[in-house]
Image (cartoon, rainbow, N blue to C red; front, top):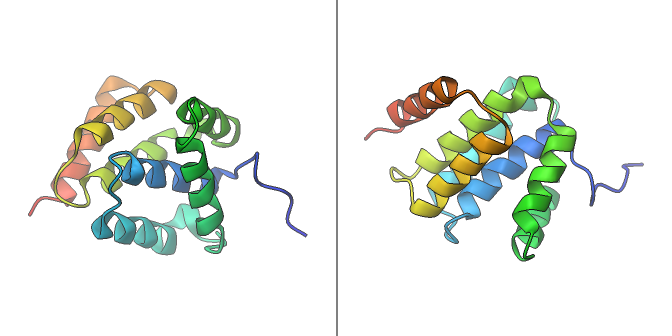
Length: 140
């Protein structure tokens, strides 16, 4: 029987939550972003044994938190509890890929990416390399 996950996330849930948060940050979830999230969950090794039925639960958690005044802080609290440090750069790379998926990065997405860098304490040079890679993959 699965445990109550309303207040806890797995590492994979955390990766997914960050991708969803970036997509929703500008209040306009685009098809390209959803496709990028779905492809990541279906194809990347970090999600190899992930139950894709969790996507709707994690999405609801993110949307519910975004409706609260301190929801972003609460989301980062959940992520810091469940995401191992070895996946911090992976999380940022996935977030950057979702932000870049539609060919443009909105101001709200940029602010959230900045907050992710801060919350995950990512090295500035590493973050820049990840961002450059995302831009290169999504150029048209």
